[in-house]
Length: 404
Image (cartoon, rainbow, N blue to C red):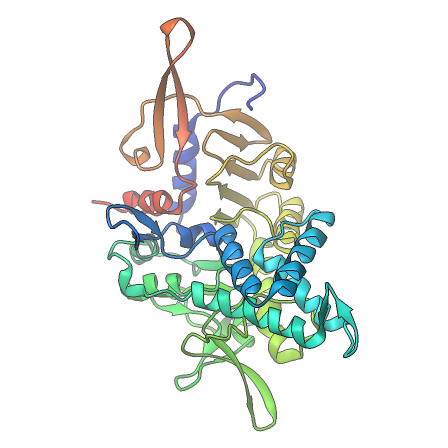
């Protein structure tokens, strides 16, 4: 994996990362994917001595949505498999989001008497609705099952102990409300682009104009793929997006390729534009966690910014080792301002290498471990392993920064 190159210094990498995070004048943002929600673990329903993710991974969610689709009848299961094949032919991961996106494209293309993937228009609508409702149900769990010191709350605790010239921004492609739950538990003022008290409505000017948003002490939360708490309502002959209680229909989750009117486009378009604007700032730092780079739109936006802004830095913390053929690995070796931290190797300064075995200090203990194995001839072989790609370890790292 390291191609025989000199190993990376894990201690220096983490110390540099900590120094970046500690700078009060640096624009900082986080980009969170599904892996951050998976990091919240609760006692297993089947075996109380074990734990399980409160919200499953994308793969787990995909399996649940497929099971629900199959329960509608054989033709729906066959249609799902046909859509999966279409994803694979286009080198797309056949996950629930890509399946949902394709279903919506099918709705935009099919006529009232046409058939696609063996389904008529009304049946495609039924399958699309099933997928939405499954997602909404699974990502709206009982939050009373969550223990008090869960990772999102540790993130809030770190935010409470830092003071910055610029507001910290959190971009997420998750639909759940774990971030909101963690911030409120720590009483962190949070602004998500919605304003009002009765039915908070989306206010795009608050993302474009500094004077239309709260001050730097308010953390920003931008939900790139929507939320289970969003709804679309009609008022005085106009449609608007409002925030409220979780919607079991999941109407406003995951943007599609359909031509929505302005009220539906606006949140997604505004948040994408906000991420672009953030990355254009001089000396900006984006920390990516729980994201597997399976979203081409987000990938192009992030990689494009790195090519144009040499002083913008991205740290991407990977739970699993990225293979050399992945777009992430290929781009990282070309861009010295992208640092990839995997469990076994790092890509730093455009060079991929293993982590050198070092005795971990106090601040490293939660995110790095020294492994010892018996090699040939009975010799002890040491290697380093990073754990910071686990969101729970990352937030423990943040907590260690402000301890004492």
